[in-house]
Image (cartoon, rainbow, N blue to C red; front, side, top):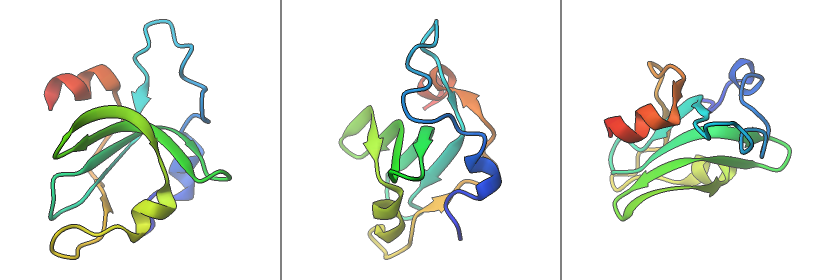
Length: 102
């Protein structure tokens, strides 16, 4: 499965585009996760040319905003060898809602 289809890529802001938002509460467009471990990536900004995403990451060791590579994610596997998937039911939400819900 393609992690981010082209029609969704076009909707995601470019890198650094949301950092000047008044309330600093950007929209999260994509949720990626490992079905067999406790990792989740929420994508806020994206540069396909540079292979860099900016988003909110939840891992076994904590939660943080940061940068990550789609190419690296496409090779990563969970503890049972399952690949990272896109949550097909996820709809764009404000970052604050995600941070408060999880």
